Length: 75
Image 1 (cartoon, rainbow, N blue to C red):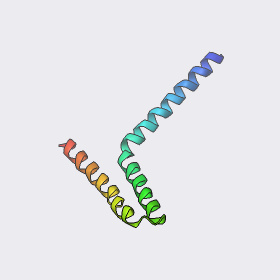
Image 2: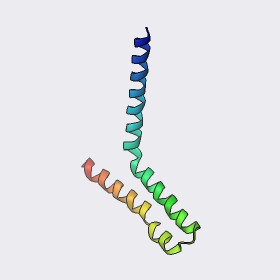
Image 3: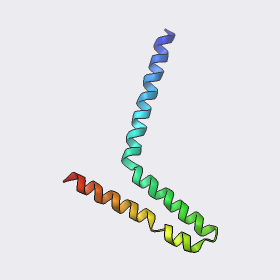
């Protein structure tokens, strides 16, 4: 009985990991762009204005490249 419950728990964990993997693969560009945005804001708040302006372009660039690759791969 205990072995059956342990097996069910392992299967449940594997299913959750599979769903998490699918979500991350679908939204990885947005997650990375958001982290870059937070990095840029953090630099601006600490007084590093020039570095913040430089890194402020990263999120948009990441998202544009993501969109371009998705559109290219669909064709």
